[in-house]
Length: 117
Length: 109
Image (cartoon, rainbow over all chains, first blue to last red; front, top):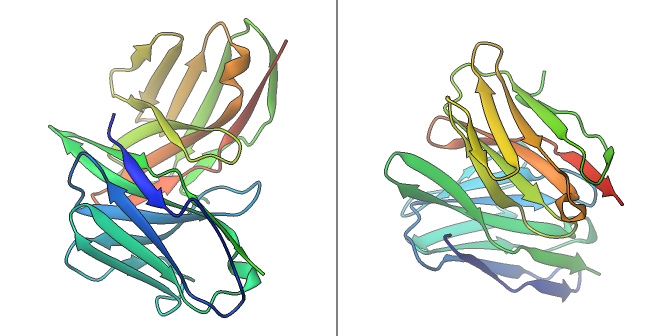
């Protein structure tokens, strides 16, 4: 199946620093990518929908100035957590939409574990 | 009411048992449906799409009931390796994707 990569897989940073997470679709072009966050023992929560060449659409309650999303190409979307704080510590997962014929499927990256000290 | 609802479980079943999960959705305009599997501390992986006519993949059977707005997943002959959280995913239009909270399955030896 389609492959989506994420980098880094794990990051530990000090409070106040910014962290950039990359999401790449390796063998298909993705006009739409999604960013999720998952806290321990909780479900995935959609943060934003990233469209290539346009501004991301953020879910209610997600600060667009804190979570900067750039979808500069059909295979790359980045999420930057600006001025990270301990409460931003979470599992961040991206997904990319793949279209084959009439069926569209989401494929997930392996996730990035962020720990803010 | 949540857009997509699942029984969180956990479902504890013995090896070899048959187990079924349901997932209800509230938006009648929902267009496509999927089951994902998520292992502990890992990303979700696509298990199967759910088609209107129902579909089967080995021990897994997925069904869609549009009239009652639910999808189901049936697992036959449960294996220990089936232990995971099963997420129901509903696409509403091109941009809107909604996850259920997941149902945890634990298969016991």
